[in-house]
Amino acid sequence: MRRTGLRKAATSSKLRRPEPRAGGPGVDLRARIGSVELPNPVMTASGTAGHGAELSAYVDLPALGAVVVKSLSAEPWDGNPPPRLHETDAGMLNSVGLQNPGVEAWREAELPALLATGARVVASVWGFTVEEYEKAAAMLAGCPPQVVAVEVNLSCPNLPGAGARGRGGGHRMFAHSAEDTAAVIAATAACGRPRWAKLSPNVADLTEIAGAALDAGAEALTLVNTVMGMAIDPVARRPRLGAGGGGLSGMAIRPVAVRAVYECRRAYPAAGIAGVGGVARGEHAAELLVAGADAVQVGTATFADPRAAAHVLAELREWCDRQSVARLTDLIGSVHGTA
Ligand code: RRO
Image (tube, rainbow, N blue to C red; front, side, top):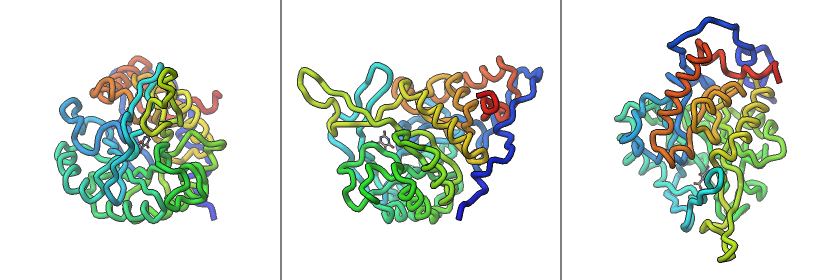
């Protein structure tokens, strides 16, 4: 049985073109993703802002929409062998391999400092099996209310041994299968927070996987995780990353993210969508918002400039003022109906 609430093709304000208006300074940037209200639409992307308050020396974290922390598993996990990062001509490859201290240690050692900054926090969970996701999500229950949502990471490209350790159906990642995606989302309800399904662009029909996530209880989609890639040193005749392949992020994948957001917004007008992929400027954020994202996440740009998310927010504000956009909601999904 379909949960039609998030899927219906009813006329949504997200698909209406904005009325032309005089506008001027002071755009209202308040954002809403599903049931989560944020003061503005610019967040950090998971995996690029640490597990805690690491960026607080550079960015006023509560001034961002939210801080999305690196994905956590029920048990600590060491990740992949180095090298884990490789800069490409137009982005970055990573094979970090989900390194994290585990939910319990995160709650004790990292979360308090992050909350002390006043930031809104989006936790992120992963597991090798549906049961491990369930356990990690349940361990987040009872977190302080400043943990406003849980991103369920179904799409890490760097899990060792595809199909190993009981992952459903032998798929490379849960997000490669509508069935596996639904099973994980259904299993993570015990976190007691709105869940955002983080999906992979490496699929034939992203809207099918997105629909499965929404039907299973996800309130929003995070689009997209990195694109599977690889770099090889032709002289050494070896992969440049310790794990072989990795996830491509940054400038090169922004059009991939824009299309994913566009197609999912068109298919699911009422779903929450966080757009992520190659956002380094305010105008990049605006592009994803116009494609249909309710909010954006800044990731790889933070590696070059730890203040990147704050710059994107300031530039988005200026861009809206220059374009006489009075409210963020006037931008969201506004390409639909024209293309
Ligand atoms: O840790 C990683 O290797 C990683 C993760 Br969890 C993810 O979701 N996406 C990515 O490119 N790398």
